[in-house]
Amino acid sequence: MRAFGKLCIAVLALFLVLAAVLNIVMLKGLRYTDGQYRVEAKRLADEITETGSYDLTKYPHITGVYAGEELYKSDEHYVIIEANGNLYRVEYVLADQSSTIITANCILGVLFLLLCGVLFYIRQNVIKPFGRLNEVPQELAKGNLAVPIPEQKSRLFGKFTWGVNLLREKIEDDRQKELSMQRDKKLLLLSLSHDIKTPLSAIKLNAKALAKGIYSDEDKRRAAAESINVRADEIEQFVSEITKAASEDFMSFEVTQGEEFLSRIISKISARYAPQLGLSGTEFLIHKYEDCILSCDADRLAECMQNLIENAIKYGDGRRIEIGFDRMDGCELITVTNTGCTLESKELPRIFSSFHRGNNADKVQGNGLGLFICKRLMSLMGGEVYAEIRDDCFCVTLVVKLA
Image 1 (cartoon, helix red, strand yellow):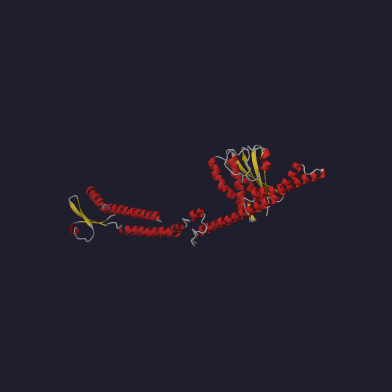
Image 2 (cartoon, rainbow, N blue to C red):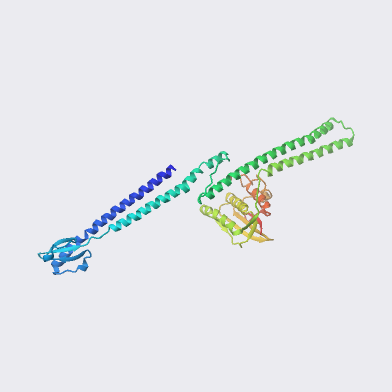
């Protein structure tokens, strides 16, 4: 607020200085114009001396020339000149520019008031609301999700504050989901660890019996071995459940199925990446396509495409990234292709697993979740995603149902 106040003072002071300079320039121009009659009177005297006559049409500021008895009889502005030994009274008019100066100053006054009004409007509708929201991001970053967010009716900040409020609610909701997920995981692990103890105890008892030779009968030894095998299968099943819980439940995905035009999604992607790739020298091609309505969550589908393009930027050679289109069996196929693929074909079946990173990711930062997220989201939207390598190019295709 203080910085804006200083800025307002500086702007208004500059305006007043410019207005003063303009007035000085206009006053100087007025004095210059008022001196024109003297120049014309001198020229008139020269003309009378040379020709013995004169033409008043040549002198816009001179209204009359008189001699003899009328030499000093006048209430108008005049000047006495001498030509050929005679005196002449030359009447003239002064250019009335006071009205021009007054009009200019009135306009400057209106502009000054308008400038004050604009600065006051900015202060009331932009600076002050922004100042009230200034501490909100810091509090959210500290984890204080109960920070009050004042509602704004302003067209400029109403939507912004509404969006910040939604962000806060989303963070709070995600925190609650995370806590619930952690609690469920802990309960699951405690339950599974308790359930594992029973088959593990049976395995240990049977193993000790076999080691000590307690079972002299072959059938009993075989039954003990089979019991160990069954219990081992139970433990393996429990371990699989633990692995599944650890690998799949660490993220929650929400999809709101709807309908969206393909062109709108592609326009968003183009607006986001075309300037960036243009600056880096990467050729970015979007092939021609026939617009259609897709059955999807538009935001989630755009997120999938962004993940694919980000991967293309990271793992490609930077020469070309292109988006191609095809249609098959009531689905729109959107393919993101990048040149410079160094991934081995044998790794293709595993690239959609969580935290999996290929042999080409040694020098690239990442967590191995991009393609995993795409796989989950496309599955929730009723679609599919697959990858292939063609002519040293890495291609990932999103299969989206048509509405």
